[in-house]
Image (tube, rainbow, N blue to C red):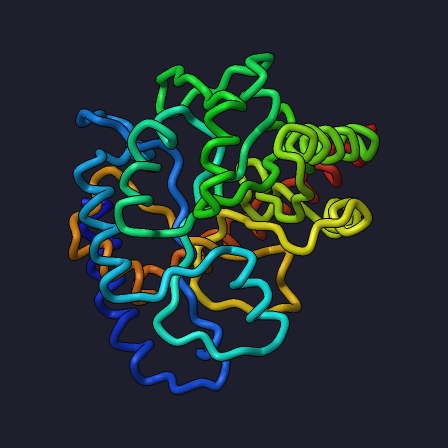
Length: 287
């Protein structure tokens, strides 16, 4: 019922979007984000089957110009018009990204950016995806993909902790450690980041300042949306691809038909802040 409601709203939103001929639409670029690609069907919404993933990549490369994340940021900075462009990203660094996604990306010459949690790669941290414990990629596999040139890498923190919930010192350690470890293993500098969890309450201006001070030029959130501006380069919106997405739903997502979910995220954020303020007031009254 919930999924059917989302789809209905998506069709309505798509029609509204057709009526909005705004100049800002030159920066309409769907940035897809995945977590895991599986060889067999699973119950987890974040685990896309390799069959579905290939269907999606085939459609994407046949109908869009899929650009590297770095090129997207460069075009954004230079105010370049991006017509029918898209970007593919992955979060965390699961081994199935190498096993199943990478061969498909190579087959269709589709560039992608993978944001890795270095503690997960080092096996000092365990990540659970849809109640499943998945293996991380190895540095050897990461280097192989990096040498190919099709896949770029960014930081996703070291231990995958939500940055807004830890101290400033810990934030700096998370960011510096992940950046340094990736650069040491790849032998090249990296300057893109993806916030763990990535919702509006998970990052703030102080965290953005730490990223800028450490040489990052952009950061991805998981806030839904396909419209972008260089002023918001440290809060890049993305579109989540789920296991249950049919190719028709996938096409709607690419068209921005689900962008209304951005407002849902911000409403949740505002309500969360209001409840937090209310809780603080009640605490002060009691004390």
